[in-house]
Image (cartoon, rainbow, N blue to C red; front, side, top):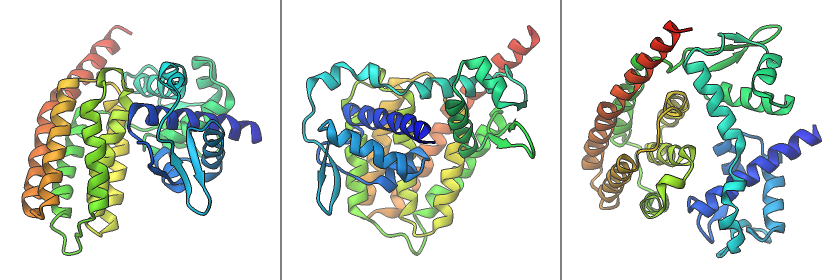
Amino acid sequence: MAARSSELSKNISNRLLHDIVSGTLSGGQHISAQNIADRYGVSRTPVREALESLAIQDVLIRQPNRGYFVADSLPASYQDGLADTAPTDTDDYQTFANDWLTNQIPEEVAEQFLRQRYGWTKAKAADLLVRAVREGWAERKEGYGWRLLPVAKTPEAFDEIYRFRMAIEPTAMLEPSFQLDHKILDEQRRIQEGMLNMDLSSTPGEALLQNGALFHEELIKLSGNPFFHMALQRVNRMRRLMEYRAEVNCERLIEQCTEHLEILSYLESGNVADASYRMRQHLSGALKRKSPLARNWAHDTERNDEHL
């Protein structure tokens, strides 16, 4: 168990370092063990180990009774070694997800089958299967083995997810309990502006997807209705399965960040109704752009199946 925890904490350290170097986490920013655990879908024990490790390396600063903060400056060696610290588990997971999307692996699998197919360790297989469960497309069978689920695997399901988001996200802003939190708005503005200033072509696609999902989840939390937030978190996890296949389109990402900043501007000025309307336009536009891509993926999968 200790060895597995150590491997997991190392992966968390690498992901945190990647987020810091890429600008997702900025100098001086407070790092909460619970927030990182929620973000990465892990327990707090390996997160604490990762934070302690990064503090020893002077990547994080530990302040008594306050916790951990990102160091204001990092050695140049961290920039140079960014590719070496990129979490390889991400590539393994995306390969696993893509093989399921393209029907390269069966609906019911044993852990041993996955270990042999991908060359994973027992610990890695367990971690990636748990992640698949968390994202809603795998479940443990009674007794033995795992079942992979066709959640958000079809273009129809992908469209339904976006239509559902169009129904709940603009509406959440109009809830009687909706309350602006300028700290949250400021943080999301920092992240979105940071994305416009970073080299998007060299940033891991998962990090970009995470930043986009975080923007929408943080805003829907302002509704004060936890059921909106829970529902959005679940569908965001589901849609990742199909969006893992998307190549990073820098032009589209710039457009997305710009629209996010427009929504933030409406909220910062107190124009919540306009923000709600702009959110609906934003999601409608995303559906129009992404729906054809989802259908192309499905068509490619069907064509590949015919040649198997």
